[in-house]
Length: 126
Length: 363
Image (cartoon, chains in turn orange, purple):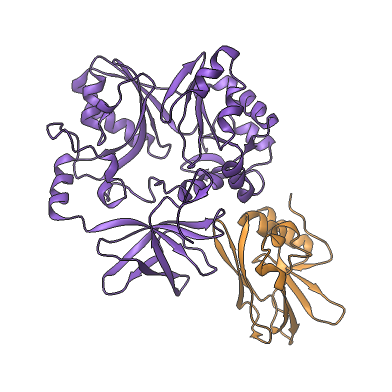
């Protein structure tokens, strides 16, 4: 069974979101997603300052077997990216909700289509 | 329902991620596929290859039949237990399958063919065997484990009865022998030393567990694919198929044109093509950018034309992407690959990329 923390929100495309104390939103991919992709080898992150629309492809997670886009779960501006991932992509496999975070956004209004942990659990077991 | 090998329950119990592979429910990895890959390059790993099809061919005319059926020449097999890699071609020179053939005795040879091609292989072999009065017996009573890596032979040999250990360790490359119920051969598909073991289905799970206890890591098809690609070994259905011939698949070395009087299926077509000049070739590619080449991606060769990646992956040993690609014969030292919409430069290299734990190309 994959790990789906109850305090996070999720998307149908397997990203998770965490609202930070300063109002920014941290984004990564779910445990279910990293498990399905297998060992990650390259992570391509967006430039800080880039404006993203909700649903826009903004990062690439590439495993031994496949490349997969990561989509912005909400509209906003990229305020930080996880620089650790360039040298240690396996952090996404090892700690998808912690050290394996991918980017932080400052949201600009459009909340996108988000799922609760319970709803995502239904989707991720299909 | 998907087919299952005799080790299916064991794979599930070991926590493997199971995927469909040519109709078989197979383990792709037990944990990290990259760790499994490194285990085989540095120590030892065990793979379930029981989905492959073992065929025993019996009859007084087995050898003449195989000399007609296969592009490589079983006349090269003179000592019992010797193995030979060969393509099995159609009349147009296209590859129906690639296989290993073992010589047991004049009236008995063993073929190991791919799982995904089993049905058509059996139909093809049977259709040609009629005139040779042969008996073809599929050995579903046997499981097959590949134990691979620099420590693999020692580990496996330690599980044989004491009187067989020295003989097993003395087997030369590409030779096998029967030790009690087990047929043990020094063959594999990883570029490392090791054994492939064919043994009664009922003994397979026990052997696997014993190997695990000796530190041999359970390895899935994911690691098997990156290992064989680093070793520059073709995968049937990706790097060659019925629409390509061995000459344009890096497999000319497996076609025995000598002696010229030996007639084999596909010979005329291959000779005609060889005389005309082969138009395409299979090459190795190395990418320096942080991206991964994948099969079917377009290869652009400046002033020459285009080709296609046939197998591409991340190489765990090199930490960069490697690939096999079919390109125009005039392709030189550099190409570009269309990786997700970006044309990235790639260097042409001669496979294998890695063998016996050593990187063989300049990175």
